[in-house]
Length: 97
Length: 478
Image 1 (cartoon, each protein chain N blue to C red):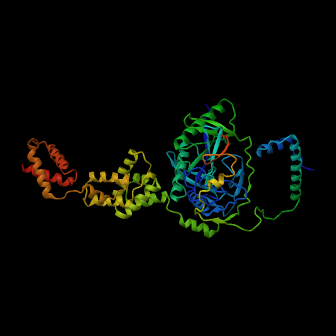
Image 2 (cartoon, chains in turn brown, cyan):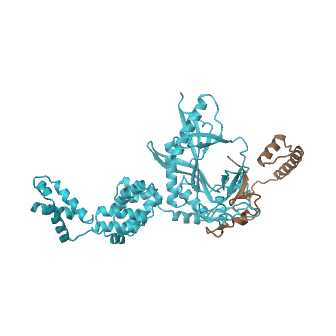
Image 3 (cartoon, rainbow over the protein chains, first blue to last red):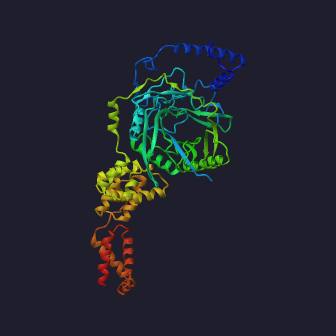
């Protein structure tokens, strides 16, 4: 494996993804991420000179909606899967800036 | 002490006046009960897919054109990843790589003269939900009614050097957007929000200092105070030889102090990537022309036209055009009664006085132009006198009454029956020998008493000019 993921990187990625990883999980993730980057390196070997960058597979553009209200109140359905709710709202652990 | 210069750039978020959200057909109406304007798309349910509201693109284009930007004819959305409960998808759909507008600018005017403030870019994005902190339980409640409401973010160049320039820029921007009808731009209600990026550098320095970003500024006054407070704080740090840290700060307008929200060093890594659920937008030359052709008259053009067309004072023009709503009322009223000077007078004097007295905003005005036009006609034709007109106008202002009907019902019509007036005045003169004696002795003021008594007797409905003339005539005969 050419790419070696450092402890700092895995720690940082863990913070960004809000994941608490055990030491074992960290080691496994380091290995997985290393091989992913190896694969990217492989792709990078391809000569893409003159090839337009692409972010969508199909040559489709301008898919729009008209500005018309068609949704009605569906609060009960929207809240039906919430683990906790109160007064018509989703209830989450206290979050302050 | 060294001389410092303040360098300010603004990020202005504006909620667009669409009926529906940016990616789903939920209502954007303000103030609904929590989560009653939500659906699987704007609550980030797995498997839901966004579909772009065309009106959002057109409003963004209109603002871009009006602020002299280049419109990006091939543009896309990107995902900005972060975790926060107000953001149910764990990403915000925004634009990083190909924002819809770039490289524009608007001219502002301050006491120091005219200056162009550059606009780096304008991009489209979605608003987040609202968190309410529960008082009874240790939890937060999330309302996603605002989630997915369309926003444009207008990013200026760091071209401003004082609070005065910042306010001038914001006011100009607000008027342009209001004239376009793209947003009502109310700072207090959050439909326009400004984040201030500010740094300090020594006068003559080549490089900008480290900047901070300030949030939670919801009035022009708060913005001015926050700029002064942050400028002082950064100068003090530099004078003490301490570094300014790049961070986001929250302004507390009550304490007049800002405190650090989060340092950009920790985890402000948004890992943007192209949004795979939305296809690119291609703006053809034809579409661009269509939107350009539809652009309404903006304030600067309107001011020039008012001067040529209506012949009213510059000061009146600046007040009338200072609000899209007020200028609409003005133009609609003039279109009916064709008397711009009188219309301007009613708006400039009585309307502004009543707004101040009732502590209302210009945007709260609800009376119909045809009622004001009718009132003006009634005064011109002497159907009612000036005093009565003011009284009637107050009812037009508050309840939008139809003036003719109101005057009829309340019996306020000017009495033009000269015979009746003459006998009323003659009777009053008869009962006031002292006033007559005073008048004869050269005290012309005594006439005022008779006029006053007459108006009182006629319940204010007499034509003052006629009363004066008849009183003088009859007094001279005594």
